[in-house]
Image (cartoon, rainbow, N blue to C red):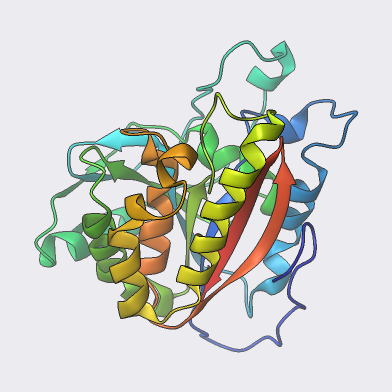
Length: 279
């Protein structure tokens, strides 16, 4: 396990390497772009900032699954120049002026939707929707140049883990085409529990179960993830009908067959938070 801001060393560059997939924490609102005197978000920001150095080569495009967009069936953004959706509330005025002028990738959105449809999974392309803060906030840290074409993928409103794993499996061919698949959410997302020291043991129990499960190979991992709600303290970590921040993990894990690894681990606001990589 790699603690806090530590990351794996940079990999030797190769041509046409298969991109890994990641599940990354995106923090709270625009947290990385505000004053942080207690250093709550310092470790998470450092992890995100160093993510490009863990890749064998620069992605040709990025697909981000966000826990902040729920649709009937899956959907992908298809705008040439996606706008930003400031879907956070009561934050300083300057955080509503943040920019991330990244190019969209309509052709990639169409291909991703087609891959899902070929697998019998409903999907659409939304040519007008912008990028929510589950995308632009962590990506502005990780890829500040905003020069890699980017699309956002929704989570399916039914919140079925098996469906999200299957969606990831269907999207796996994109990795061989240079597309970096990122699941953006939070491994612990009980808003009422953040900042309460009594939350620590429960969050640690679920976090340890997650770490052990991600280290399994694809089929075993998928089986465990479909039953995630039975894990220790699972419904404390993600209250019923509020697991939208965990489901991006299912897509990222489903898109890889090899073992995963925890590449970020830190206690944030009295809760255990992790990030994972899959090869």
